[in-house]
Length: 112
Length: 119
Image 1 (cartoon, rainbow over the protein chains, first blue to last red):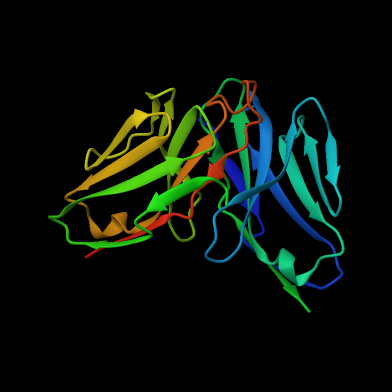
Image 2: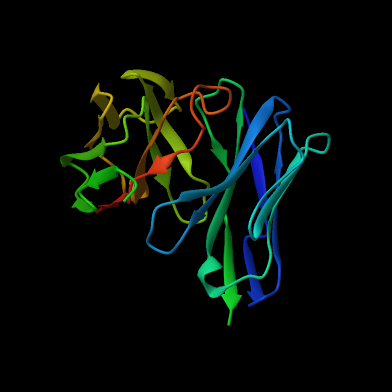
C-alpha cells in the first residue's frame, strides 16, 4: 500500500519568514495530494490540494509543488503569520481510491 | 460549522463497557469515514462507507464495529476496548468516496472528533 513520509516533524519560523514542509510517497499510481491544517483542539481542514496533471498550485500565501518523477510534493507558506501556527498533514490517494494516506504531520510554530 | 457533527465529544469507558460514537453530516455527501488520530502517528483510516455500503475496512479489530444506516449517519460501536485504543476518533464525509477521479472534489470534511479514554 501507499506510504507517505513527512518532514520535518516540527518547524519554528519567525513571523514574516517562509516555511516549507516536504512529503514523499511510495505509490507511483497516486495522483491526488491534499494538505490539511489542524489547529490545536480543532478539526483538520483542507487548505490546498494538487493533482498529478499539474506541477504547482498557488492560493495567496500558500503554494504546493509536485514532482512526480521523484515522488515528492511540498507545501510552501510565505510571509508567515501567528495564525499559521498549527499541525499540517500531507496526504496521497490514487485514482478511484477511497483511501487517503496521511503523513505524520508537521507542527509549525510562527514566532511573533 | 462544517456540517459534520460528532457525539459525544468526550468519552471515558472501562474495558468491559459497550458504547457508541455517533456522526451526522448535513452536507448531502455520499461517503463517510472513521479515522483514528493518536499522538505522533498519522491519521489512520478505519472504515469507509460509500452510499451506505462499506468499501474499506483497514484490518480494524472486531471490537470496533461500524454502522451506516443511511448516507447522513455513521456510528462506531465500541466493545471490550483496550487502553491502547484511547485516541481521538474523527468522522469525515466527502461528496464522493473516490477521492481522486470521482465526481467530487476529493475534500474530506471532518467533525470535531470524539476523545476516547479507555481505563
